[in-house]
Image 1: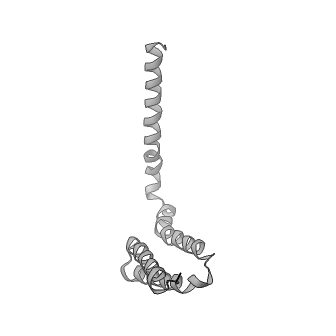
Image 2: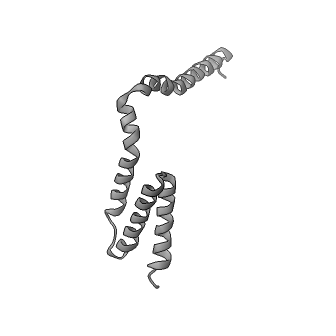
Image 3: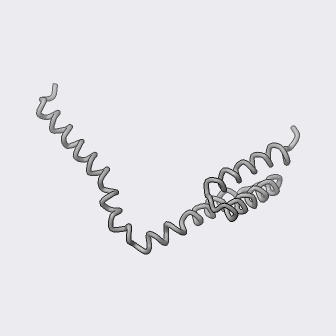
Length: 109
């Protein structure tokens, strides 16, 4: 059985490493709060990420799914331009796609 001093040392080292790893992001973030680059990326990245996700999603769209997908994409863009709320846009576009593919453009069989 390990010696109690060895166990206490391991606990102290583990606690110190855990604390340091949790504090590191806050310490690294402090100088970046005034950075113009970080503010620029913060303003542009959500739209960029959504464009990349949309392109990735639409790249393998089958011919039968083009109409509901295009309409859902239009609904998502319209919601975003109207309300400027990414959560509403994503959920609204997803709901439109589910509704269109399962009810309006449902294939029999």
